Length: 151
View (cartoon, rainbow, N blue to C red):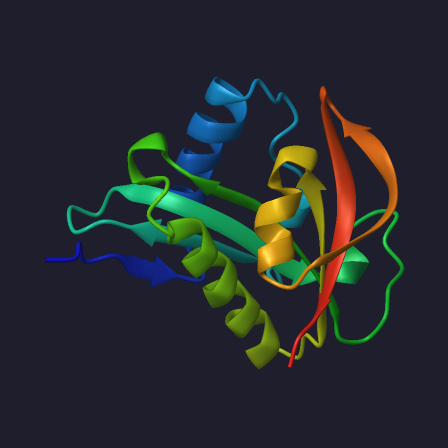
């Protein structure tokens, strides 16, 4: 029987717990939280298991909140996709991405941009994202921008 998971588009506490565990403790990032997290237009997606433990997260927001991204109506930014180790390799990341895309679409997004770790580019490519621009260093990890038109 499949585990029951609950998706919430407004659960910063759940998302924060996953981001600390994955990005800060596991991957060594220091600057994990920023003003985007405090903006009411940001969707802080968290997935919780049947015991209400946060197991995955992402965030999505209008492009005007992201420094350095060209702002245009309908352009949104996706990021901070993370799944705790014990829930990886079961498709949860893809489900969080699809859920986040739909939540953004319902709020007017027509295009999503994301700043992918190089190792994650194939994952996002399978979901229809295309890379653009140069490889950039975000703290200690190489990233590249990707984008997708939402249907």
